[in-house]
Amino acid sequence: MAREARAVRGAERVESTSILIVEDDGTIAGMLSALFRRGGLNPTTVRDGKTALSLVAGSEPPALAVVDLMLPHLDGFSLVAAMRGSPRWKDVPVVMLSARQLPADVTRARELGVREYVQKPFDAKQLLATVLEALGMPPR
Amino acid sequence: MEAALATSGSDALVGVAYLIGVVSLVLTLLLTLQVAWLQLAARRLERRQRRCLETWRPILYDAAMGEAPAVPPLAPDDEATFLLLWNQLQDGLRGRSSREGLNRLAATVGAHAAALRALARKAAASRMLALRTLRYLGEPADFDRVEPLLDAPEAPICLAAARALFHIDRAAATPELWTRLRTRVDWPMAQVAALLRDSDLGEAELAGLATAINGQVHRLTTAELRRILPLLAIFDEADVSPMVHRLLAPFQVPEVLSAALKEARGPALLPDVVRLCTHPAWPVRTQAATALGRLGRPEHRDLLLGMMADPQWWVRYRAAQALLSGRFGEAGELAALGDRLSDRFARDILCHVLAEGRA
Image (cartoon, rainbow over all chains, first blue to last red):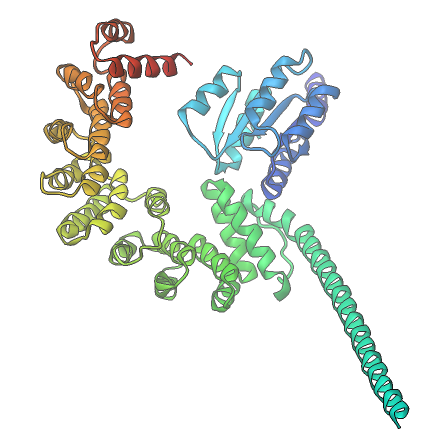
């Protein structure tokens, strides 16, 4: 009985776990959204850095953000820096996606407290596992 | 009589003006109709594409997650949009289950036949899409279909064909590419190098290609050498050092020496680099200073200090950068050394590069 109750509570928590996806490529953004929905999460997608910045300024923080590095209007690093400067968003774990694998980018990501720096092309299952692990949830 | 003539003349003018007016009106109407028709066609195309995306995106996502979704027939008008989406996912995802899922879906909807139809079209965009698709499908039978496109007049088509060939059969594609590298001056070498780097060539294949280049190097013209030398960056130092050594020989022209110095990576080439630090051509001295920054030893510090007094600013600048590369002492020690330099240009350039480092 207690186990069932715990499972229901766990399911509720998973259902309500919101993920922010900031990705300008529509196909990849859709793929990420479908992937995270399959993982039981609740994704919201924005397609550029400026829109994401307006969310940082006026919305409730998500449980985790998946941010592409190369974004229109505002790059991923500037967005994460803005998140770190916001009292409500500063602790949001970030998984950064990038087609670039320059050591300087990886160092900058680390300095900004990015939890994982994932290179594109990425393995969908591995990315889901990374996100679930960052959220402290069991793998699916 | 004169009055009648004048009246008939003005009637003719009015008639011509009337005719021009009617023709203009008809042409304006036709143009308006055409614009309206084009707008309608664009809207129809947009609606069709949106419908296609709504239908196929979820199916492609399921396939990319390794599942086997229910698949409707692929309408001929939707083939291009489907192939575009399919390729975008192939580009963005890796992992065996994603690749297998997408390829299974491609087989179910007949994407291979659709790609071959696109390949037969004249439009470059269609052929590019077809080549991307054939690359990911990797059917060995497609090698002979794709190989003639290496000789297409458009460089992007050739390079897309080369990428497809390397994906289908790397070993067979390597000599095909090499035979064309000499003649196709329109192929951007940076893209060829990226292609080879992305092709995951094995050690043996890379060594084979390096041997092929090495065997031909003495037959290449200066222009060909300058174009091909940047490719050496993708090879192991051991595979290319003997070739670079030959290209750094004293009889070579400055253009070849400069290009070869950029590829000097092994310590075996250090004597060549040191010799070229005093070459009469300043672009060669500039590249030699940079190479010394990569390969030099502490005993070459005085050589670099001397180059910092060179009449050419670029030689002084690269020599100062090389000096501060970490191979010739600590920055603090070198800054103190700079204060004792008698040459004003050498002191200035060292201050400049030290300031750049602090910025």
